[in-house]
Amino acid sequence: MTMIKKIFYRVRGGGVCPPRKSYRDIFFSFFGAFLGMYLISTINHFMQIEPLNQLFVVGSFGASAVLVYGAPQADFSQPRNLIGGHLISALIGVSLYKYIHLDIALLSALAVSLSIVAMHLTRTLHPPGGATALLAIIGSNQIHTLGFMFAFTPILTGAVLLLLVALVVNNQTKNKQKHYPRYWF
Image (cartoon, rainbow, N blue to C red; front, top):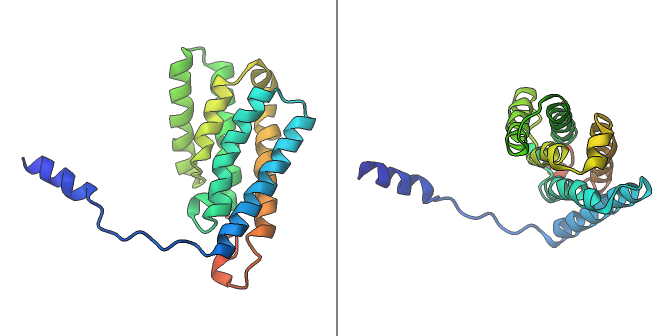
């Protein structure tokens, strides 16, 4: 019975929900996400990436947009995490797909879990990186044909675009505590 009490004690929370962001902050979150995602989608379209693959790639970056524009002060949102998390995870996913011939379910699990380990070790933890690693495994032939180029385009290119937009949009306030980034390295 003591174990159950401990579990209930731990999951009860106890903190207070933070206040809603200002309308200005909400607007700039919207504007940054819209601009960043539009640029990525447009570039993917011009690169003639298959529509289904484009949706997956944009999906991975959609999660990054939530972090970079909605929570720019979070550790997960910093440039080293955004760029490093996606790049490392893409390289791991591509490497596993190319060189380890296992069941797709096992490769998928390995790609995500090894990406988490690598991001921890390099201090680049970025949750959408897990989706990037997974995409390198479950993507279509077009993604698999790209091989290691997948890590650089569309992944690195997209992450850099999100970063560039974030540097402009997230610094539209005079409040220095809200400036982006908090750190680079």
